[in-house]
Length: 433
Image (cartoon, rainbow, N blue to C red; front, side, top):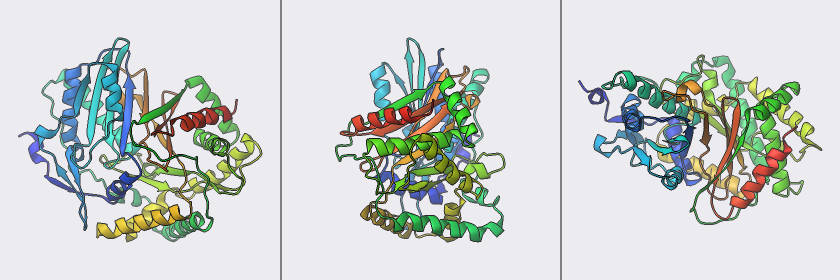
């Protein structure tokens, strides 16, 4: 029996699917995971692996269907998949990079291979409505695993993952119930802090067309990243803390901070950290997003070291306190259909923050890319993720790591490319030597 015949036609949407779908008014909901090889890949085998991945993780072969009560996922006819593209030149490859994923027509995964003279370049483009950055890396692992299996077994058919949970219970089952009241209190404290202090400092972006999209990217080499990580350890902080402190200082400098508005940065937390093996049961969305945390108030610090000390103090306290689970607890216990009501609440909250000028610029850590999960017969010489582009007035910068390197990225539109370039340069200049 063909494994595709065992896949249900519909899957229920999870809470975060609906939230992500709501966010597509702020963000172009796509992840680009780019891989560069110094050898040739088998393009037909890559195409086959991508196609089979839509069955291996069946949610990828679906379209997202909004509904006033509860949205759902519906399988796309296999004749409509068309997920792989072989670029004939660099321009076609770059055009694919900036092209959106239509989650509402599906499928949720696209791929493009460009066989350049210096080696192969592969993009796996994943919808941000179906999953977060951790889920996008799970997609890459699935595709590469199938590619490897096809090498020795050309007729290989993966078993569809129809029983793996996409829900948040797989996280919450690891949280002691005695912690619930404290998490609930944490949520209200952070939510209140984000509302009572009007005025958040952000980069002075201008409105403009949503075309052409430009990805601003900076790659930090392995030796430089090692220096930064060592500096962080001496300060009892992490590489993420190092980058957050530089983000704050560049934000104040390039944005010409007046010293009065709050210095906040929105961040995300991968909740897989609370699952014992760190692995979700299926491709899904398991991240919390904090609008305006960490918050330095109006005290940036007189130099980089003092800013870093403030950041470390804030993040260390949060990490010791089930970071990210306060928002998840709220969703798990209280957010129920109808989806139209949830949508209204999200829209109301967004309007209130915008009215008070409390929507912060964002820094999201998409985490390290495991070389094993992206090995297509050969290990990539480099790999990175591009953060989903944000629409005016929002700005989001992303970080991803690979084999000791670090990549910073942002997707922006005219006329904000130049100020984003300045921001990246200023952030890198702020990093300790």
